[in-house]
Length: 226
Image (tube, one colour):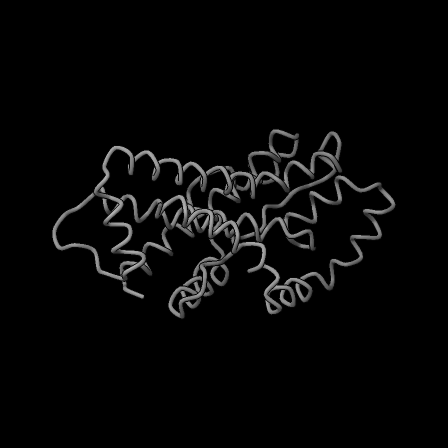
């Protein structure tokens, strides 16, 4: 993978993680909990969300070895005692991050479609750069650079959203599921929390995540390279 591709992947991953965490913090504030707001987390400034391991080291290693970009930021703190309806409000707070990523990803995809319609020559460029592995043309080509960023932005946000929607603690999907379950069932389900990270790693190792992502990834590729 070229240096330019690595830099772009890391840039869009940082943006995706920042949007994700800011959405959590903003929704918590709207639901009555100012904890994250008071800590300066309701912001699109990535410095407020960076975790040295999850936002810097792990993404760099994954991108360098050619794996899909993945990472995490500092968790957004939520005080349930400040929420008006703790279980229901936590559902929306948990859902806010993945929904923000899905929104950003599909907006980026929409812009690609619009740009392809306005500038048909981009179709040739997209095939050459992503499918044939050719380098960016020499010189200054802002439109081509923009469409590359948008493509990476689409994939990264979709990857991040789908991963976080897995209903296993501590991922956001577990918070959504616990808001749907009855109080007693949610308590029993939360007993998985100490083992959650091992369950997630097992699912990733077995390729379950890839089975979920691949059809969506194929759809995105079809739209972009059609």
